[in-house]
Image (cartoon, rainbow, N blue to C red; front, side):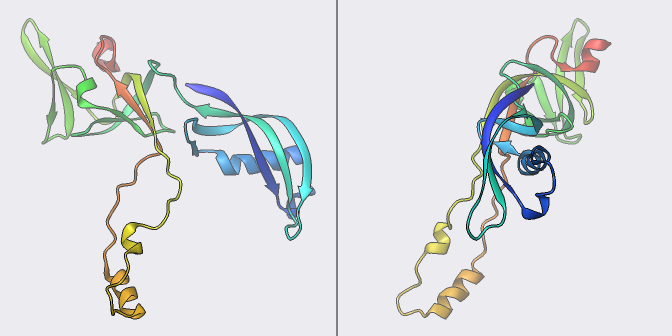
Length: 219
């Protein structure tokens, strides 16, 4: 679930931190920059593990801070595929069951990866496993807050780096329209609402025996 990743970065230390030990100042700056951040194709950064090497520090013209190239290892949350994890159901939707590990919430178990047959209860807003027994079918509800054991089936990284202006903002004004009219039109045009996508998502599965709500198998 957690891995050590070796990284290299140039750390800027402001002048008011020069009186501190370099290792201490570098540790603070690295954690400030990386802790609780997702690095593309790496995972969710948790905390600094250790510093391997500090190269020479430099002060550049016009900047009173020091700049030090640092080789270090960072603790990263990045479970391997097929790893079994235990989390809690955050909520359910038509898209599937949304699971939280407490420190990481972007986990979804899609409908096709649930125990089958499954149905979505619109009134209760929960997924239900229609468990077949000799006495007939029993509805097992996947309620919010329940502990759930799942297998990591896939992962999705999304590059959330800033992009350039949208095409709408770059559309030229109509011929004969002044700059003021163009600015007014741009201000009046409503910006389309964009759903904020998480930079790192885990896709889970509970479609195998032994997976699913812990209460199902402990009773």
